[in-house]
Amino acid sequence: MTTETEPQDLDWVQLRKDMGTAHHSETMSEKFSRKFYENPFVPIGCVATAGALSYGLWSFRQGQI
Image (cartoon, rainbow, N blue to C red; front, side):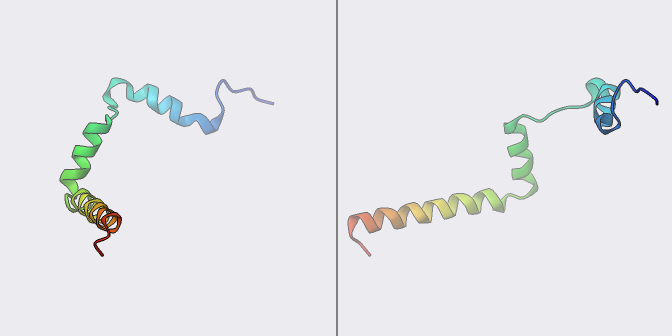
């Protein structure tokens, strides 16, 4: 029977140690800006959809069908 210091399913721990400071985690704002520049139509479409739904709800509340 062999004893190991770390289980085999935790190889990512050693990988992260080997990468050290070269690994950079994105902040939420960095990720949003990167995703926005990769595909700008998605956030624009989300804003347009939210605006249209808001206008529809406002019109429905005002009684203007």
